[in-house]
Image 1 (cartoon, rainbow over the protein chains, first blue to last red):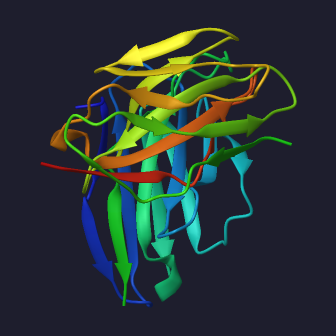
Image 2: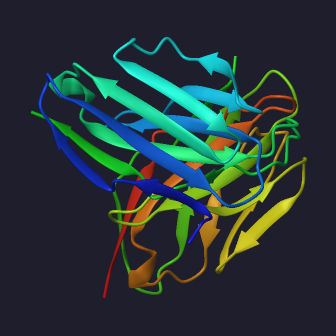
Length: 115
Length: 112
């Protein structure tokens, strides 16, 4: 139990579906992240939110739409995805003050399969 | 720029063998360094970290020393167990930044 909870753990969706991934952190952090983990590729940062404001969008296609209603919750809305978007999506959180030693804590991930 | 280079896997060891997974980095400033572990079917867990040169991070029998002169943070364990089978990621984080730069991961399999 890392204090970062992701749902659903597994999701299969068609290319025309709309679905959402949810993340909740219970660590009192004020920064939240979405990462993508694909086979044989380094972990890719997608989005960063500090105090509910998006501070980084790492050139992510618009078919991925993040939402951060408060410092404890983060969503990733998915629509018209492609099969190559199938991956493990990891949510993470940390303190937002940028201290070098601040640890980023990860959830267990949501396995997404696009068919 | 920032980057992390990790030893290519997979690595297969017998139980009680000595483990080293090499990690080197490039950074523009003075980063903190981390090792994360991912067990099968799970997310990433922090294994250990070091925030400045010559610091040694340790946890669960694993150790890594922040070597600024060689820009390295090699992971070691004296005697691995089957339960250590996982993918290990080296990562760095610059001061003032919120992002982690990850290596590609090294898969370790420990056989009885």
